Length: 125
Image (cartoon, rainbow, N blue to C red; front, side, top):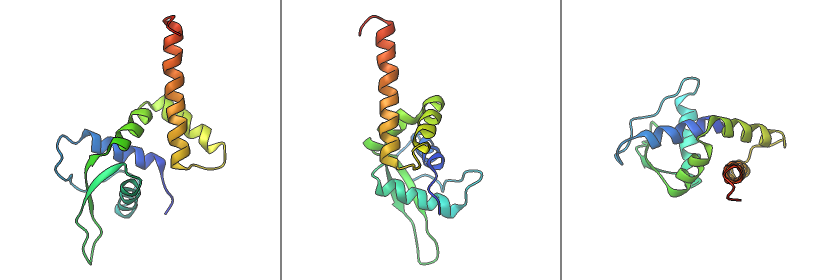
């Protein structure tokens, strides 16, 4: 399975939109299999971005997201803007890789650059 940063972002957005801390219904996204979603949920859990309720059994794997963690919120806040997201993906892909930690740092730097530009425009920097 290839890790999809776009699927990771979709999962985080879906969890953020969930109104309670109760386990969500199984996630489904067009173009992704249940197995791909399960693996990405595991990756996000191991990265410390989400909390899940594990309903897996001997016959089926099932993780039900319950909430974003602090790190998950931080990443998503930086990845929320489509413009910033696409810019970061293009920058990181240009380096020949797409490590989550690198993407996280690029998104943070792009967000900081946007804030600095706003401060400059307002004469505060």
